[in-house]
Length: 219
Ligand code: C5P
Image 1 (cartoon, rainbow, N blue to C red):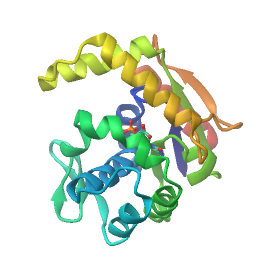
Image 2 (spheres, rainbow, N blue to C red; image 1 turned 180 degrees about the vertical axis):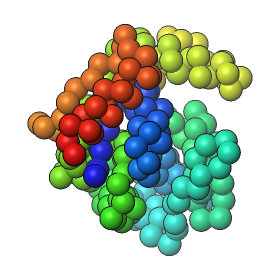
Image 3 (tube, helix red, strand yellow; image 1 turned 90 degrees about the vertical axis):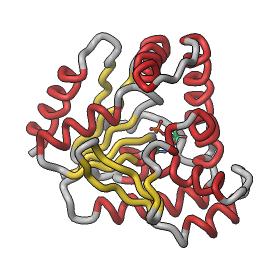
Image 4 (tube, protein in one colour; image 1 turned 60 degrees about the vertical axis):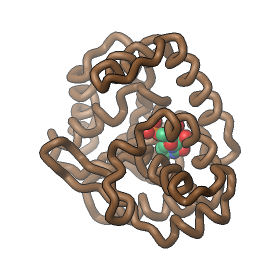
């Protein structure tokens, strides 16, 4: 079974997707982490974030992988643990530029389909239900208001010792929403057959329960 969870930034997709995967015994693939790793690759090699050919050349010689650990899922770019590096403000604010490059999307979609292979999988991102896994048995479009998403990101940041004002976070979220929904290739859109869940007033567990119920009904 394939479960596709799409939606805008900070709607809680990865938190929920991980829990759903755990509950059902499926593997979990965070495709946003892959676009972020491609952005780290550009930064580390001094490549401009808009230079499609050079990023592609490096990306096609690189492997992005996920490894489970006691601290949660780690993200590797070749042998380098980039779990923390992919979450810095510089990467967060530039990933939409890299993810809008058609050849980078093509390469990462190819890698994502390969990861999905024959496994039962929960995959989250922006274009999973529309492009990467169009035949997924369960498709969820997870949304929440921009102010609620900013508040959640603010709380997460405080725990990590990052002090960005709430209003700035909301502005960054809205800019990323705009870029992700207006790019030419695979923009963020709800698949026609996706179930929309608004998590603004729901707990994580409530959202997880709804998705597990959708999965059980689809079996
Ligand atoms: O989900 P996350 O916020 O980590 O994703 C980071 C960025 O990667 C998004 O803002 C978007 O630009 C890009 N992305 C994408 N397609 C996906 C997943 C993420 O374009 N399937």
